Length: 294
Image: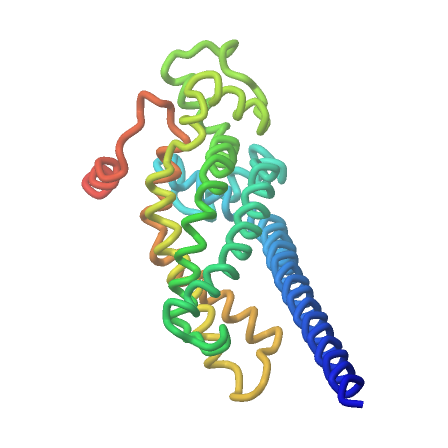
C-alpha cells in the first residue's frame, strides 16, 4: 500500500510538472504572438499614415520646397502655388509624389515600428511597470530615439523628392548659366534622378544633407510626440479613451510643434539636397550664409 501511495504521489507530481511546463510554453507562445501583433500593427499604421500625408499634403510640400530653394522667384506661398498650377498643372503640384509616397510610408513605418520598441526601452530606463505609466516627456524621448533610426530611410528618398519638385526651377537656372537645352532632360523621374546621383556621386550622394536630417528629426520628433501626447491627455477625461477628433487635433498640434522647431533646419536640408555638388556647403556654413543674406 505504501509503495502504491508513493507511486501515485510521484505520478501526480509528474502530471503537475507537465501541466506547469505546458502553461509556461503557452504563455511564452502567447507573448510572442502579442509582440508580433504589435510589430505588424505599428508598421501598418505608420504606412497608412504616411500614404494619407502624401495624398493630402503633397501640393503644399511642393510649394514649401520651391519657396525654400528659389524664394527669389516668388512673392509668397500663394503666388508660388498658383504659378506652379498655371505652368505645370496639377501634375506639377504633385511632382515627386512617388518618392514622397515611398518616403512617408517608409518613414512612418520605420518611425512607429521603432517608436514601439523605444517605448519599451524608455519604460525600462525610467523604471515603469507598464507603458501606460509613461508621461508625455518620456514618450517624447522615445519618439526622438525612434527618429534617429528613421533618418536612414528618410534622407535618400527626400533627396529624390526635392529634386523632382524643383526640377522646373533648376532647368531655368541651368539655362541662364548657359547650359545647352539638349543637355538638360525635359522630364525627370525618380529612377532618372536616382541613377544620375549614383552615377555622379555614388551612394554618398544619396545621403547629401544627412547631417541636417540627423539634426532636424530627433529634435523635431521630440516636440511632435510631446505635443501630441500632452494635447491628447489634456482633451481626454480621466478613465476614458481619446476620441477620433481629440486624436486628430492632438496630431495637428504635434505637427505644428514639430515644424515650428525644425523649419530652419529643413530649409538648409532642402538647399543641400537640391543644388549641384559644386554649390554644396556644410550645415553650419549654409545656415550662417542664409541668416546673413536673407
